[in-house]
Length: 583
Image (cartoon, rainbow, N blue to C red; front, side):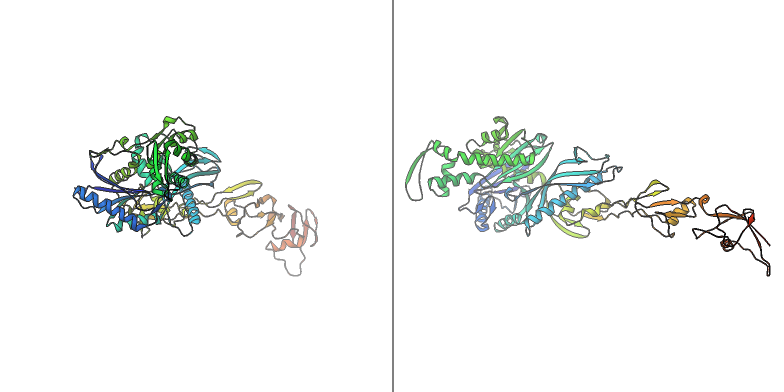
């Protein structure tokens, strides 16, 4: 029995809830539940400040559950508060050749580049704080600046993507681990509170709808948004039920616990003493008037955050958490989002269909998250950290979602540019007045292997997988020499920008290259034979003896005839002249 037991702890700002359950026919059968308030304000806005005191409460809950069930609890499932979540919206653009057909790997590399940019930005903002990326969603793709559903097989000049990425500081995880260690518990599952809540409040079959879930606790209001079957964004507002309590505390000059009782009571007439010792008697309506501005402010902050990441009002809003019962909170949210009031619903634990509990009925929205932690643990049954080997380096990765090779690359400082085998640069020049373009080499694509098998960025990874990434090799730039052109076109003379150049000259972008036809070369006919003269701009008669093998006998002067008349050594020659040399 103990092997199947699930012990979950929901460590909230005001209350800690412990729950023990076990799987039964695809449902979570809850065996026992305990809850206890912190003795002091040891947590603020969902963040643990006093580990010792929080651990003390966790120990007491654990002991009560052990005694009630007659078992020993060794393992625990936990959730990190949404207070620590940071979300970045990033859009990046990449230029492409207008004739290039976009492939899947180009889209994957574009997304990876955007995620790396988000990671760099969040690291810069946090400086020394170490963050884990816990989730991301693609808002939209763009082709030449216009939105497009799928970039694959299209052509254009520029591709873009906008993503929403969510991060969690590693310190938050460490504080939870410290509490567990002090309670003599081994953490076997870790998730995020908004993930746990949405896991049972918005079941997969209705996630096609655009629904926002808001977990309003004491210190934070955590938000998760579903759309098209996926969770597209997580966020939070560091403002929740405690602000309402503090408003009552300041107005009536009470301690925090008294103010909390005034906030939560349903009595029409409320009696209490302030810190000075004066007794007061107020009506419930008086309290509602005092807290109304705070509730409106909280509602607006929540709605602003929903609109920021959803881009518009969702179809419905589900409220969970202890403070979702605040007076008029649902009505104010509906008003701010301009949706019908009945579409803002407080989700009670009794609405969860995947839970079976025969004991005291679980009531109220405050049980959604602890049930969600246990149910998520039951469904996933994964370790909170998994070991991956990346290029022979051992990595311990936070396992908060189904992980892909892209996630592994994001956890490392792998340069996404190494995945892209860029083609070499094209060479463009003019040849005899015509534009010539020689394409650069395509290059060798990167190779991704999982356990020796060729994979891609979307391939799923599991504990112990070995990932190897062989960087892509860029293609060589296009290049051609004058000799190459002479060989290709069987040319004997080529000019570049009007000048004769060496055969090893490398043609540059924009060069004006001309092949000089044989008919344009300088030639004459000597005793009937065509002879080409090279190396000078102008020739005189005596130059021909440098191009012919002609022996003049001693003591004889040859007779030189140029175009039928007697010639002298200094006569200027013209192309095609007919020359006779008679001895």
